Image 1 (cartoon, rainbow, N blue to C red):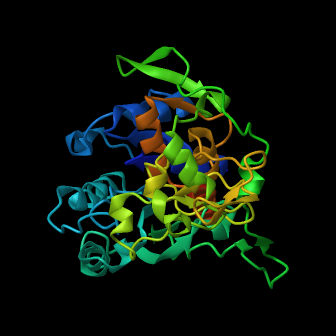
Image 2: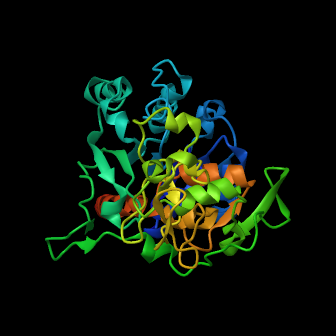
Length: 392
């Protein structure tokens, strides 16, 4: 069958397109307002079909017909990390998504968002549109999927909605499990599977020099592979702190003398900050500031118990066998399931934001693989009906 055509909205740096393209979908339009993210998308899939601007400024007549629309409207208003402000204009951007659905009239659409979206008022409004509004011809299937259940080395839960006007399309069944009891399931992929073997001590703190032109502007890049394997320069006190955190541990493993005042005065609360990842499990959710250990469990998983530090009354890691740093941009991108040779555009901060905001390509590919047979069957039916018409 010919490749199904696809529009990617709020496309970011292309995580969803990576997964759908791997299943034979052809992107014909992508819209992304962040120019650095749009440039990364363009560096990998071509600039000609990319609109680097406000989705609300895309005219109806410029929206092409497509077999499928995919995308995730900005989710900050729904996220546990957000302010949960229902009046946040970003929470209304899914209405722009619906405008594209009405104009492109796809056979299928996919919406991806944070897990809390499924409990939001906006989600209920979306269901109402399918019940008696603009989406009446679409059957919806939805649920919260964990990327780790689909071969991604990351426990990242996302709300997925599949709307179809060619018959209901169920969400994909898991292909992986933490401890599979079914022979058809594989074991979760782990950090060891995706980042083991990379240099323990990156050579540079900076991206290489160089720039490229996208959308008429010069931007840093293009960077790929080990270009992104960059380290930070933590203070001696920060290195001391890292050395006391074992795999799966966090700020409560720090000696009292090394606690910042904000943590010393708050013995309860978030547990995973200043946390260390585990080699033999998927990572926690990769966020946009994964390079800051105070933001989550982002210390490199390599740690072996060392000597008892009498001054602090705790065990340090063995300095010869422990890696006391946060994960690099390259490691974060691999945990997000981007290909090792993916091409990146932007500053360190911009690329980190692109990585943290992306949809893991393995999750996207599982959804694409679930949808593709229905589109192919529909295309075959259209051909058969056309042949019958021509015969008469």
